Structure formats: structure tokens, C-alpha cells
Image (cartoon, rainbow, N blue to C red):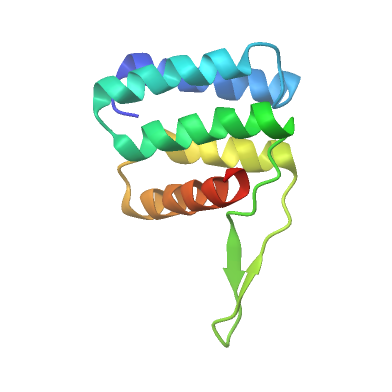
Length: 119
């Protein structure tokens, strides 16, 4: 996120999720508001990931998305087993610096995983 307003909103969502869990009252509305900020910043990847995230939370009542993988010596990828809350918080923390090259690649992984799960 690029603007102070968006970062403040993102920090508030992270704090609420850490304290109350990922399905706190109003999370979908908070993510929709953050998405509006991303629209103003003109970042289509972040806009899409935020929409898919709140749709996923509405649809599944959780965030059990397999978007993080580790690679062994032979190049085989294996999904990491991560608790839903930690997985959600990890994605939100990636969004803090969405322009960073590595973060952007991981955000794309989340976008792909969310799309595959939802559609």
C-alpha cells in the first residue's frame, strides 16, 4: 500500500485480526474499504487479491488457502502447513510493501490460489 490512509487501515485490520481472529465482526467491510484505497492507488493486483480474500472469507468462514510452498533440494514444491490466522496475517503483511518484487510474487501466488479455490 502506498498511501498513509491505506497503510493506517491495513494496520488496523492486522491489529483486529491478531486480537479477535480472522473472522472478527466487520472484516469484510474493512477489506472492502481497503480495496477502495487500492483502487485509488491504481494497483490492480492488490485490488484483485483483496476482493478474492473477502469473497473467500465470506464463502468459507476461514482462510485455509494453500499459497505458500517450500522447495526441496530436487526442486519439488510442497505446501506449508500454516494456521489460518497466520496465513491471513502473512498476506496482509505482504500487502504493506506490495511493490517489493518478492512480496509481489507471493501476492500473485495468493491470487492464483484464491481464484482456484473460489472458481
